[in-house]
Image (cartoon, rainbow, N blue to C red; front, side):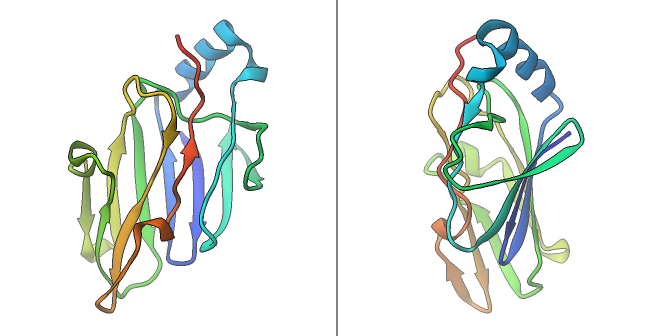
Length: 155
């Protein structure tokens, strides 16, 4: 199930999870839907961010503190970064944690960076720094989407 689509100048990043509905329902049951909110932040090279829930798409504004949460602890998320610029020669997930970076692989022939995230029990922020090279010039990881806080329900 698609949850989040980030349209960037150079790529589209899609986040999906088959476990999301189960975690959402558990959060609603324990905390209530009104507490399952988050705010989202991104860099200026992002054109728009779309949340997908129950098949409906909703564009969200930066720092919208009432946007539905999509990132939960102990939940697997598939992440697909489809580059629109065919001159990308390399792309990596640029987390400070090597084990997270190792879950991603770059397919140059498809212009695709794909992998998965699971934040385990870490409550806080869900950063998604993407580092990539176009025509020999490396873009800094903060040119992608980062500082996306997760919901903080403990259940």
